[in-house]
Structures are given as structure tokens and as C-alpha cells.
Length: 184
Image (cartoon, rainbow, N blue to C red; front, side):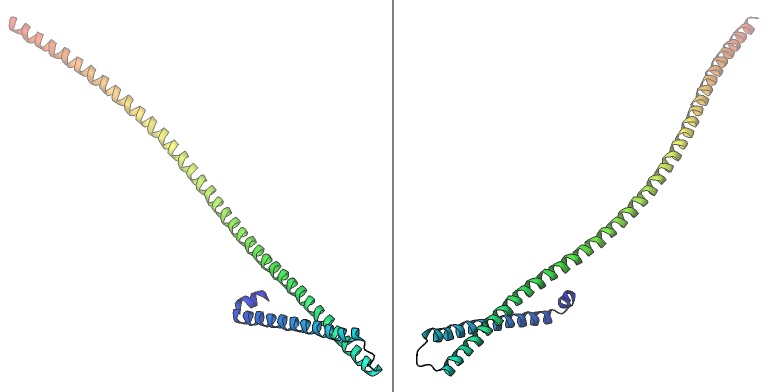
């Protein structure tokens, strides 16, 4: 019912005006009943000897009706206030229930989103771990290749130095042989 009133704000404003009008009418009836009771109570208190039994009965009848109207209008006003308070509490309870339901749905959605993110994060973590493993394997391969290349380089360097020494020795022998040939 509250949601219907929220959707139809014009009807809600008219209903609020009608409630205030009823409250004003109940208040007017109560004040009129109080005035009547005082008026007829004063006539009974006067108790003049000129009153006849019929006149006395008429005064008591009017006093009874005024008191009845006072009690009925007072009770109606009291019930109105109790019902208004009860409706306010029910309305607030319904709003809180709707808010709690909305918060619960929002929390469930956030929980699902967090689980999805955590699930995708764990998949990403696993994928990154696989990449790290691959890179470490590739790194080990590259390191071993680099060491073998360095060993090959060192071997070639030593071989080149050996060849250089041999070349120098052969050149020296050749130069000695040429010198010897000139002397012979």
C-alpha cells in the first residue's frame, strides 16, 4: 500500500488532507460536546424549584446526550491518534523491511561480484605463475646457452692465441731459414 501511495503522490496528498479534515472534525465535535456538558451541568446544578419533573427529565436527557457525545468524540479522537501512530509504525516497519531486503540483495550482488573477481584473480594468478615458470625455464635455457657460448668463445680465443703463437713461431723459423739460406 505504501508503494502504491509513493507511485501516486497526488492521491497520497489528498488522503493526507482528508485525514487532517477528519481530525479537525473530531476535535470540533469534542469541543462542542465539552461545551454542551458544561452548559447542561450548570442547569442541573442550578436546581431551581420552578422546574417540573418533565423539565427536569428533559435537562437530564440533554446532559446525558451531551456526555454521550463527549465520550464518543473523545474515544474517536483517541482511537484516531492510536490508529495514526499504528499506521506510522507499520509504514516505518514496511520501509525498513524494504530497505533491509534491498540491502540484502545488494550484499548478495556484491558477494557474487567479489567471488567472480576472486575467481578470475585466482585464474590470473595461476596463469601468471605458469608464465613465471616458463620464463624461469627459458631463463635457465638461455643461461646454459650463454655459458656454452662463453665457453666456445673462450675456446676460440685460446685457439686463436695458440694459432697466433704458432704463426709467430713459423714466421720466426722461416725468417731463420731465409737467413741461413743466404749464408749457405
